[in-house]
Image (cartoon, helix red, strand yellow):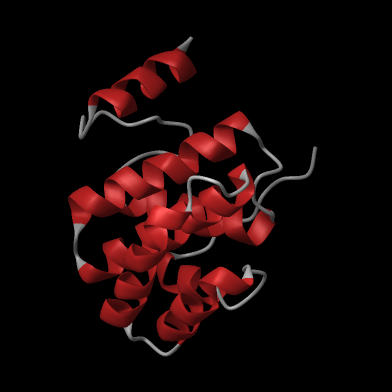
Length: 136
């Protein structure tokens, strides 16, 4: 099985310049230009439309949202979205390509976790249930 390269958190934003669906393009552009508040606003506006999207689209959204929130210093919000992306990656290892996975792991480490660690902070009951399932 090929290993997945990791990236520094600073390089994580570069990942998002590639391979995102058109619905995320405006947020991607804002992120690429360093306009994190604008990227966050675009992503927040897209959130209600995610329910009907495929799992991979929702996972990418979670990854983007987590990285943007982390960049803005919103640790609790970033933690929730990065956890959703991490959970998607654990559930389906093909969910992200190697670069996206590297970005996820870099952001994940930025929250103080190890790559395989589900986390210890409880921000919602749903998250706690997911952590329990992955620990089995």
